[in-house]
Structure formats: C-alpha cells, structure tokens
Length: 122
Image (cartoon, rainbow, N blue to C red):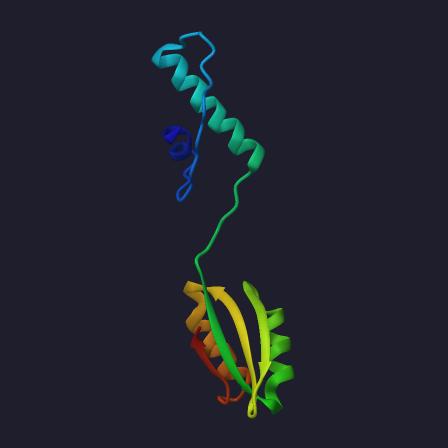
C-alpha cells in the first residue's frame, strides 16, 4: 500500500484496507497484490487533489474602505472571505488564505486601503 502511495508521489495520505479472511491463504505475494491493487483502485476512484495549509486572518477596515476591500478580497485568488462584523470604527473581516500567502495578502490589503487597514492572524 505504501509503495502505491510513494509511486504516485502522494504524502499526508492515509489508506486503510481491511481483509475478511475467507479461508483462502494468499501468501505474501498475493497479499501484496491484493492490498496494492485495492489501494490503486481506491485512489483511481477517489481522485487526487492538491491541498495547501491555510491560515485564518482578520482584516480591520475603516468604514470608508469596507466595500472596496471586501470586493477585492472576494475576487482575490485562493482567498475565502468569512464573517464580517461591524465595529464603531469600521469592519472586521475574517479571511482564509494559504499560509505561504499571508504576507502578500497583508501587502494587498494595505495597498487597497491606502495603508489604513490592518491584517492580523486570528
């Protein structure tokens, strides 16, 4: 099973196979083929997708900039906009971005708000 995962260059994957013994002894080679074949069929059926580590951050935006910043955040690639809560000074927007993209997201938010918005890890 591990060999199948390694040959497909997969990591952070869990694969479990349960065999109900039916009286036929497969031997080591038969077990390897059965488990490996089952693993390959399961991966073929499930498909593979790339997953990235993400971070939740909060963006504090003054009232005058809320609409513009929200619009751009929603259009930003690899960014999920969460809850928006309003405060006495503006809005706090929760967003999810890739961990490798936090600094770029902070620069984008600063540029869109003329330096008036703040981004912090939630």
